Length: 288
Image (tube, rainbow, N blue to C red; front, side, top):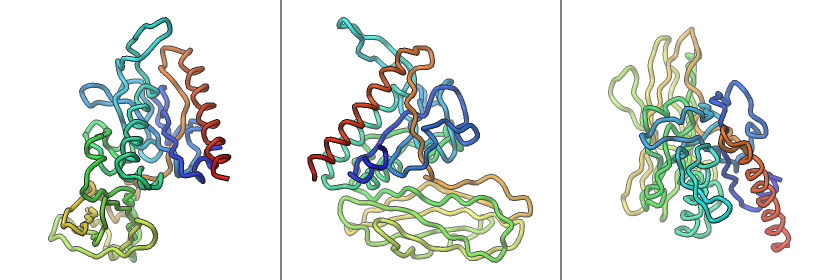
């Protein structure tokens, strides 16, 4: 059903779960299905910290959004403050809708690049999710280029190279140049032009380096108006003790979990899932 929705250009925004688990290590199905139109959302608090209950995952959770003490509707004309990744997820869903309204005709992937490339990066999220940041709706609507899905290299023992880096860049106009800038052991920055290899996707390679070398890099995009957008900075080492690192913007997760303290929310999440399936079916039927 998720793949069917993907084929109809539908984005699935889903809660990452509320068990304080690392989804990279403890697969949370169906949340760990690697389907490219799924965007996994962790919960943050009002101080831009990870909610204590929120699941996380360096490669399997995408971004954070407010999910603690969120005012929500309840039966009998009541309101109640609830916490959970299911309270964070609607913020991202709403942001996606705004992006689609502001920039009609975007693919689900372009919407994802806008959401992922515009987060506010916070130290509390570093290494705990793909984007290392919390949703920023205003930035997602920016007319400057936005860069996301940058390859985050793992430490490697390979001295031959090259180390291939890919990225995706979008703009409200036209992206005219995408560049990969890198530095060896904190030295002078060297810049390479990245080549287009598909819709909004670009690639370039860093030459092989000797053992015990540290490499940092980022990707920068320029549009036809001269506006510039830059990715976060990544780093890895060439070493005989590989580890660390990890790809950026890799597999997304999909979880239908509500507040960990309110089991009834799970039924609501399941009902929402069925509604999404129904909408996907209706879209497909209408377009036939």
